[in-house]
Image (cartoon, rainbow, N blue to C red):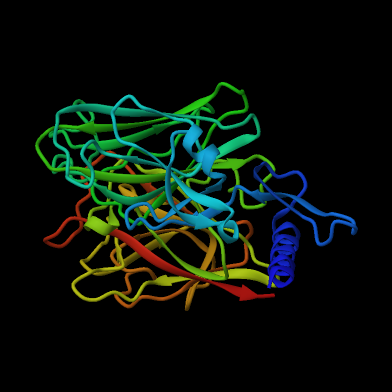
Length: 391
């Protein structure tokens, strides 16, 4: 039995080393030793194994913080993390980093920023700001995943985010600021499930701030996963893309759409990675359950109609821009789309928009003016499905 046990330990250690040792990757270290003498007159079998495993994301045991970082137990503790399950075949722990206190600093990858008292809501008036430090000089971007983000939104102007004088009636908001001069738009309302990229800047000491403005008139809740992206990473988003999607198909929505409100003062680009073997992309309205509307912008000549053009002249208050988009039954490309249906000018039936212009992107613009549809309700924004087209 002793010989069999030693053999099984040896097999496991060889497997772990072969699986997890990856040169050039920072790793936690676990040392295991076992000295056995089979016979006093036989040579001693000594097994010293240093098991390295990459600090990749791992599945935690928490429902609120589903992903952590795989670290050695001692490293997780020294960095102020919390153990939530194991990883690396039991040689590592899934380490969670969370912070909720206003004015906190985040210095670990895969960290969660929550409102004070989370999962309870928060309504203390003021600005709750968090600072994110780069974990290394090779970090160029942050990805923010809004696991939960629920804030108020102003009704004057409709969809306005922030305090006076920007909004006549102040609303709660989130302002994200990097160091490159090109920042994401200020957002508000309900954005649970959305994400956002922000450039960090090239200097070692560059930081990114997340400022949650709370007016105290509503119950806010936020849980934001913060991931740091190396400059050399293959999954890094193109510069200045606020949203970034991969895969041959997916869905892009406007900020505020989960709460049925198109936000004002938006001007950002959603980028889609061109997959191998694909040369074009087609956009279409998502299939949603009524009365939810997948495309509800402004400037429809008649309620329910589409509005398109090669210039934004007819889409003054809001539009999406698809480079050289071709709509069924049109004689030429269209770039700007607004109104209350995605499709042919003045049509009330949606039509897909196709383009073979790369890189694939979709720009969303709204002015600071009141975002009012021609019907009895305010504009809701959009939810569009994309499908990449083979070459």
